[in-house]
Picture 1 (cartoon, rainbow, N blue to C red):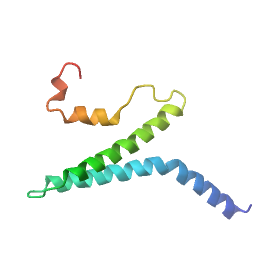
Picture 2 (picture 1 turned 180 degrees about the horizontal axis):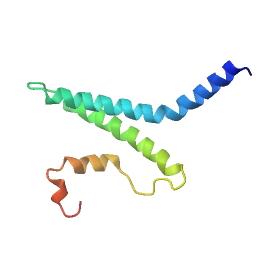
Picture 3 (picture 1 turned 45 degrees about the vertical axis):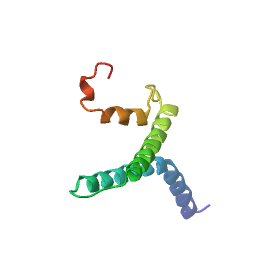
Picture 4 (picture 1 turned 135 degrees about the vertical axis):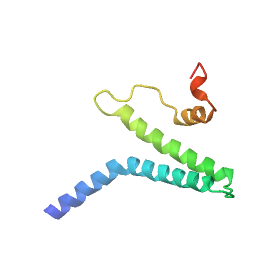
Length: 100
């Protein structure tokens, strides 16, 4: 295999390894862009769109956390539930609620 074949093979490995992170970044950007649209006056966004983007973000972040849990020297040992974490962050004044 020549150097061009090696480069293509390495590129495929790199792209495959980075895919979960790239998908998370894209989901985060889409979620952020929707929040910007919501913040504009007189701009009504369907609830299902917000829920769908939030669900996609949770799915992608969970995937990245799973990689951290499964690989690495120490791995991710803390329990994570991204959907639940976002739910808690939406509770008004959540920091003052004792269980949190």
